[in-house]
Image (cartoon, rainbow, N blue to C red; front, side, top):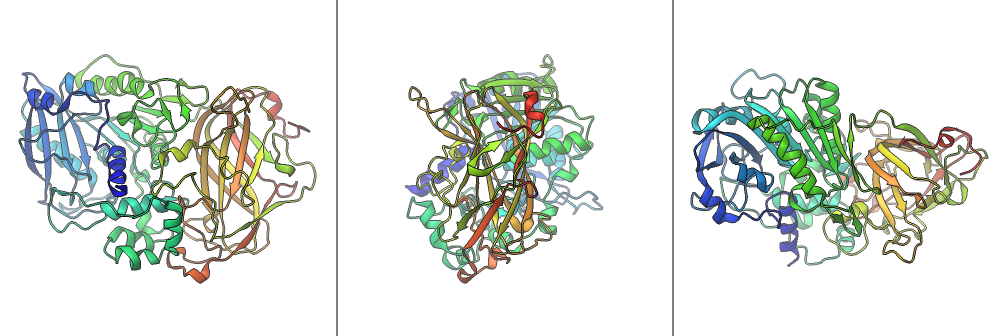
Length: 625
């Protein structure tokens, strides 16, 4: 039962299973669309399996393309999909929907490569990447699919979002609009499987155990999910011991990508080649980038793709949408809530009806211009959409909030030589990353209540007094920690939390809502290419940027920060000695004492981008808070 539930969860997240948002069904699709299955030749001679759904009515229609590694089933001319397009209005409005198995997956020919590196220079037909495969696919479709109007759009979520982003590089002239949604950008720095070099363990293990199975020949069959035989993720992953045990106990060396991850424990040429950001320049199609504030997988990719296009392709017609969503919720869920937190409306309906559908119909069907802003951003806490002319907002002012003695957090710089806070970090007893026994990476962890770890001695907590007015933070947060360790390596986790008032009349009384949590693997503090050990006991600066937020810490709430050195099983354990963690032995793991300083000489603080801040917060030496 566990493995079936996990598979269904993955299919939902990846857009292969659909909830009640789509009511059309297979019979409706069969009645209104004709299905074709073709093998489209690429420039190197390989052929990619493609399903085409064309309207039965007369007229000319644009093509809407989705390229995916997750299969374009159901396979067979007499088997129809339950839904077409990103949302229900698309099928009703009539498009030519095209779904393609990418190279080397399911029924397509060729060899599959994870995050296919983009080739800037192509000298022959054998120089192929996802940009060329998209170009060749569009060229064939325009020449062979009847009733197309000569215009193409592309979209996709997660891995398909990566293919949408890759397809807009050196794009075919007919590709006039594209929407990469939660696109993967960099698998070592911040997407999916790593955060600043720290491995996101259950996410990679669960995903690659089925997706990474070799495919000896074209097939319509999906690989089975992993059978855990337990629902307790904490005990399962702790029982694994060092990561080097995984192949010995389970994978037996038979999953190539797992082996590649463990062979590349630093930001080397393998990962750099898979970073799509440097290639997002001179983008010709109109671009709608979409992501979720609570996307546990590719929040980083969405924000980074936006920054890359904005800086490297300033003439591109670019809009960003950031909603209060988990991974793919804007297509697969109403977007009304996540866990215990309500967002006050069906936020996905707003996106589908007011943004996504008008965007594609304008560029592909010459419908009225929706005049999308540079950014549609949902402000959590206040639960409202903000129409913005830039993201991050240019008017946001940087405000420092400092750690102080006795767990206080304030807008004043330290004015005494305060003693550091310290705790014992034991790899055998890591801090849990979520309450309960989930074996996977639960999406709810992104806004979950943090009270379940607040009393642990290896979690440092800092909080302001009750806020006297709303504090709106909009943009990336910079963490600046002054730390030391008795070991030679350490992870540093910073969690930004909205602490609700102790109001007994509400269900969220005292709730400590995670707003953003990120880690810096200490050895990568200066460079992910050249890791460095800590000098035991020596105060050291560890600084990194947390992914953006747009959150209103309401009047009467408290801003809280938790600092810890483990976050398990979400994040793999650090042995706390300077070593290659992927080849570490059980004997390498050691207990260490960590310190966090907050003195005049060694301050620790967060730098917050604040909208319309109280002028008093901008004064660097306020004697209180």
